Length: 158
Image (cartoon, rainbow, N blue to C red):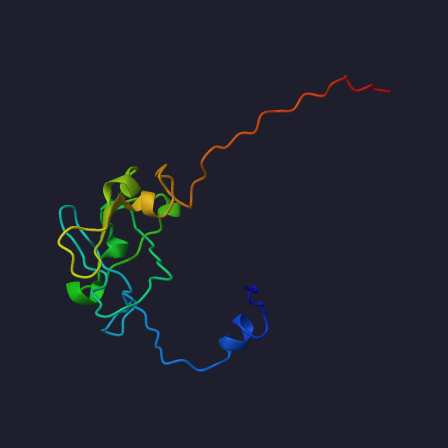
């Protein structure tokens, strides 16, 4: 029995340029009103369905930008819905109306269901799903240390 030959050009790259009967799509939280509110707020105890899709498919990309807020400051309220003009304060100026939850990535639970299952296939804290189990967001750095290497002989100073 002979081993089948494998040619990168004939198989993988050759088929990449061929048309296939497939489609791609994405689910996003875009603002249907035309304003710049490309987000939603999920309060403690609430749940949000991010996507409920029919048919076969694959998840190839997830993008979350969590706010980590316990108390919403004036900059996060919609001035159009409130009917008043609201000034947005910058936390860098010392006006911090918002209280961040230091355990946000541990407290938000991610559940994923496949094929109309009753029980979720994935149940994990948001930080565990995205590798932020230490609950330190991108804006702050975790402390990583490397042991200092000692030289085998002292350096001569001249």
